[in-house]
Amino acid sequence: MVRAPTSTARWWDRVSGGLSGLPITGVIVRSSTNVAAGARSRVSTILHGVWVILFVLLAARLLRQIPTAVLAALLVMIGLKLIKIKEIRALQRHRELPLYLITALGVVCLNLMDGVLLGLGTAVAFTLFRLTRCTVRTEHKGERWHVVVEGSLTFAVVPKLSRALAQIPAGSSVDVDLAVDFLDHAAFDALHNWRTAQERLGGKVDIDEIHEA
Image (cartoon, rainbow, N blue to C red; front, top):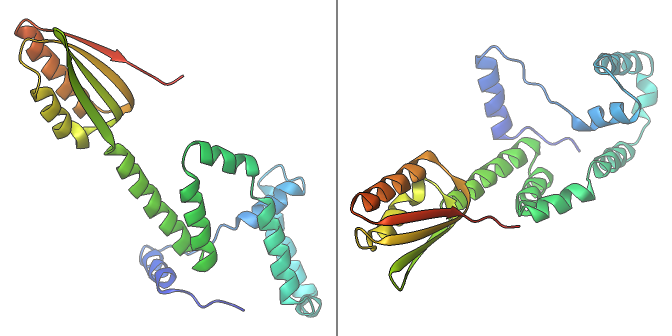
C-alpha cells in the first residue's frame, strides 16, 4: 500500500520549491546494496539509475508480476542487515539508546521525515537536560571549605553555582573538586572571578579536576 504524503512532507516540498529546489530522497538501502555489491566509486550511483531506467523500459511487464509483498520483504531484510548490534551496545553504554529507539519507532509508526524530526527533537531535549544537570555540594571541614561540583558546568547552572559559593565566608581557604564532563566559558569565568575575589581577601582556593577512570 502506498502511503499518501503527510502534511509535514507537503510543507517541506513547498519550502524546497520556494527556494528553487527539487525535493529528493537519499535512500540508504540502495546505497548499502551498492556497497554490498562491491561498489567503490560514485559511478555506482549513476549506474544504479541506468539499470532502473533500462528495467523500466525493457521489462516493465515482468516487473509488474513481482508481488508487492516480495519487494516489501526484500526491503525489510536489507534494512535489518543495517542494524549493527555492536553499535546498539555502544549507544547503550553512552546512554543514548532511548534516542535510537524513539527515532526507530517514529520512522516505523509515522514516516521517515517525521521519525527523523522526532529523533532530532528528542536529542535536543536530552542535550538541554544534560547541560542543566549539575550538583554543587559545600561542606565545612575544620578550617577549610570543601566544594564538589558534579555534572555539566554550563551557563545554565551559573546562578546555582554562585548561590552555593556565596555561602562560603570571604577570605576562606577552599578546596574545589570539579567532577564535570563539560565546562563552558561562562561557568569558567564565574568560577575564576570568585576565586580571584577570595584570594584578594586573603583566602586560598585550590581547584582540582576529578575524572572517572
